[in-house]
Amino acid sequence: MAERKPVIVSEEELRLQREYMQMVRENPERPASYHVVTYGCQMNAHDSEKLAGMLRDMGMEEAPDREHADFVIFNTCCVRDNAERRALGNVTWLKEIRKQNPKLIIAVCGCMIQQPGMADRILRQYKFIDLAFGTSNLHKLPELMHKKLQSDRAVVQVEDEDTIAEDVPVKRLRKDSAYITIMYGCDNFCSYCIVPYVRGRERSREKSAILNEARQLKESGVKEIMLLGQNVNSYGKGLAEETNFARLLQELDEIGIPRIRFMTSHPKDLSDELIEVLRHSRHILPQFHLPVQSGNDEILRRMNRRYDRARYLDRVRKLREAVPGIGLTTDIIVGFPGETEEQFLDTMALVDEVGYDSAFTFIYSPRTGTVAAGLADQVPEDVAADRIQRLIALQDRRQKEEMARFLGMEEEVLVEGLSRRSDKAVSGKGRHGVSITFGGTEEDVGRIIRVRVTEIKNNTLMAERLD
Ligand code: 5AD
Ligand code: SF4
Image 1: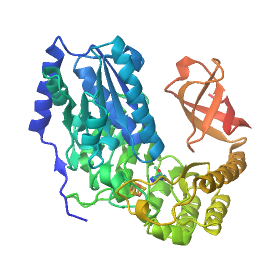
Image 2: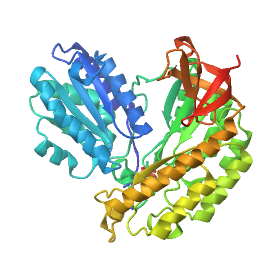
Image 3: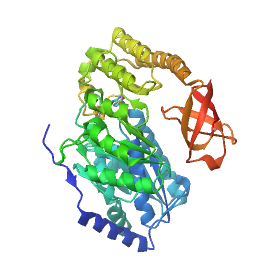
Image 4: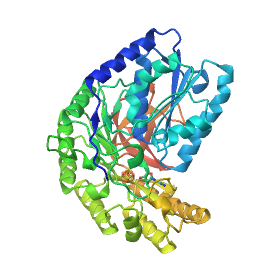
């Protein structure tokens, strides 16, 4: 792996972007409204909040949907084939909308654009795209928008750099809960995964920048922060100050924001030190997303995960011992090249043994440029489809069994909104990460409310208020 230094985007550059923002704001030709379409993970959701923040500061109003916007931007994902196809399908469909609104500007950004050769391909095949930029150029949207307004040609910028840009304006999706990115990129090169190629090398934000952001969020009344990174457990590598994720969490815990969550963790880097911090913390929620991917040692080895089943189960045991009742969730891939029925059954047995509160299950999807895409023995689609169905059925049953531990228990819920089924009920996540629904009104949204769990309905917990 080539050594690459992270590029800290300079204050000067950010000032320049603010100047572009103002130029766009003052340009009568600029779009009046925008709509951001987001695919993929929380990292992308947070990037979209930054896109929205910059667009707002360029004087544009948020449109309720893409049909009513003059500027539509697709923030894409390419982790699996279906996410990529969906994005491209929707971009193509938007071409029709432009027949009704000739002023419409169509932009595409995110992981899909950052794939080698993709920018050229998109511009050759999808000539109606006006603006395209990669994950490392996000902060340059004002400049690119300014250029686009001066030209009839498509504006494209994709650089192979590992940037960290501080102080990009953010328009947050929620008032009560906020994302904080703590590290970017990934160095793990799991053999199936495209992320290291499109999000670049691992790089951590300065601890002081993260703590400042958290303090400001607390001041503004935020009740929950979600720390983001592809591999939060390796936070701190390469920083001048010697630190790590456990220490960062401890300092964040002391700030006093009521709820702290984080994702994603890599089992190989989940240290005893971190588990000790969880054991003693006041505000870190008792929940843990710990992707296992497979329960078979040979598959894990070929996935380049660098842990085995025994090590994974040891981490689970330690977590449960330190934080009794902790909510565990995971990611699993079925149909990795060469996966036999016996190897798949090892995954089934692990899922049965651990008992997750929920599991994200995926059929392996070959990604061009990754090691696994070149492996012989790709598993036939029907075999993989059959396996994932059996896995989902097992997880459904185990999930129900695990939910039973909440019956009669007190929980605290951060209310996200009215329940989808009734306007006299609200729902949100409990401390363990499970959705809870109970009687309430719009006024409860954004508040933390104490409840007692009374019933389990379709994997949702129903509860009564205690406050
Ligand atoms: N095919 C299927 N699933 C994948 N994931 C990542 N890459 C692939 C792929 N090529 C899954 C992993 C990861 C989650 C975010 O997406 O389970 O943890
Ligand atoms: Fe992909 Fe593995 Fe990095 Fe996660 S840890 S982003 S699965 S390479």
